View 1 (cartoon, rainbow, N blue to C red):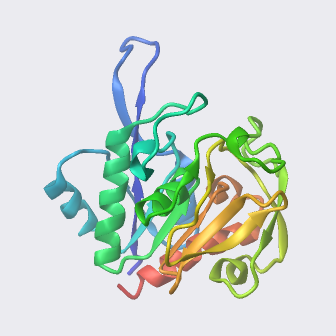
View 2: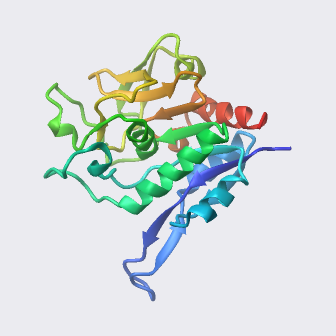
Length: 241
């Protein structure tokens, strides 16, 4: 049987039409397509705040993708909001962290994407730069604001990491849609890739049951074949659960 891969959901609010202000549960379709194309069954996990419901949601999946979205609330890593912090949604932070906690307890493999990578790092004790301008070193543009499949900056993988093995390249180009950056890497995690400016672009835990990337492989999976390997890995691991 194909494994069911849960994708953490968000909420979009209509800003026009006949229902302005109406809330809709959603994930971007590229996540769904990435799971389907790589042999899994996508299962959107709608945002909610009920712990028992979240437990039951996780009981139905064999793999988990933590998707992108809002900035992470800096209170989660002991900081106050700085001037260039973007929109936050603390309730979703807690939702994603509950999903992550339960997935790890159940030994469900996890892939974090963009915000998902930041959530994983923060949950495990790491920190973030609230905006790339707060980093002292010269920093490239990390929010391209253009076509999702456009490759805009260069990333170098770290030899010996699972992510380097999966991507099969020491150097690659990726898309980029973030302004927050991983600052201090969480204990028991290691850097698996960096941008050429030194910004952390991927992390993984010791046994690579949790892997995470700062770019958006789901947007690239149709045009950059090796990006599919990140999804195949989670799906193949999920088959054993």
